[in-house]
Amino acid sequence: MEVHEWRKAIGDIVREHSASDVVTRYFDLKQTPLRAQVIVRELAHFIRHRRDCWAHVSGNCPVWSVKQKILQHEYGEVIKDEFSEHGHITLILNQGKTVGLQPEDILNADPLPTTRAVLYAWGWITREKPWLEGLAALTVTEWCNDDRLLGDHGGGHSTRMGRRWSEDMGFKMKEMPNFDVHSQADEEHSDMFLPDLEKHATGALQDKALRAVKESMELMTIYRAGVLEAMERIPADAGR
Image 1 (cartoon, rainbow, N blue to C red):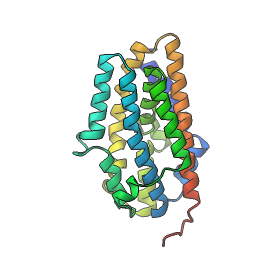
Image 2: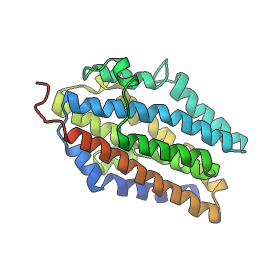
Image 3: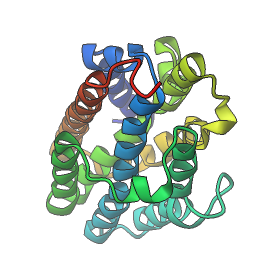
């Protein structure tokens, strides 16, 4: 497939995920500081685990130009980019303060069982599967933040949940730095590896890469369902 065909194929899978019952309920749930703390803690696990996963794909990949792109991607996430001087983990740590969490509360928290399970799964895919499948499984997760693709759904995850936090808790977008940055940065990341899929994921490899995209979105649904269930267990008036 050519780039525009990959964009359509991956976009359709992401849009199906975005319109699912689990994701709709996830964004419809009223946000409170205690519920928001669940989102922050699990996102921190997700963000840190991505670094391991991208390292796995880079280690498995024999294509120098793809390795360079991965290192470019990870330099911005781990070291600094136009959005952060200290890597993107600081964004979620700073956002946690707005809902009453200190950095140690986030970094030392145990993941939900569902979060742990899907992180193990993503880790296995990116470590043990061929590099193209690992690449496809990782890059699609960033499409969930692409407002261009999901504008008619209310936006990508960061825009949509940022709006929820604003409506329910009164925060401005600048007070939610992780949502603010990733509503922008992940549009570039969505496009980043499409030429590599066009070039390398051909023949039978195309079908395997698409299957990896679908499986990754299934894992994302499980992740969201676990966070949703944990939030639903917290009464809306708890902590007041």
